[in-house]
Length: 122
Image 1 (cartoon, rainbow, N blue to C red):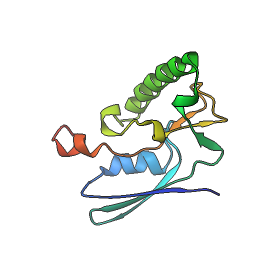
Image 2: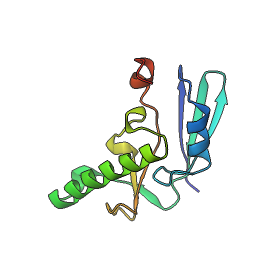
Image 3: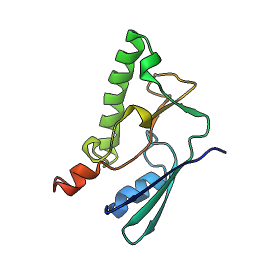
Image 4: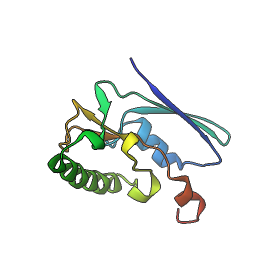
């Protein structure tokens, strides 16, 4: 099974977010595991069956649908106590089943927006 790994330092993730992500309580994020060692984090994502979307290759309708559905996903993550301002939303972090942009196919890789965390907004 393919895995995607990311490492980061200088960040402290709240324990409740760690639990929400690793227990997959919020289904909008790609399944992941987190290893924490002092101020170092290792994120390991399990995108089984998901592919990274390439907005540059999409038609206008699919791009607009993607934007609408990403807004809905962000609202849903807030319902699970993970505000959209706390994680990055970049094209390389958006995955989907079969490349579909419908709401039920989309998943995000959770990667903290360190600028927001370090600026005192969190």
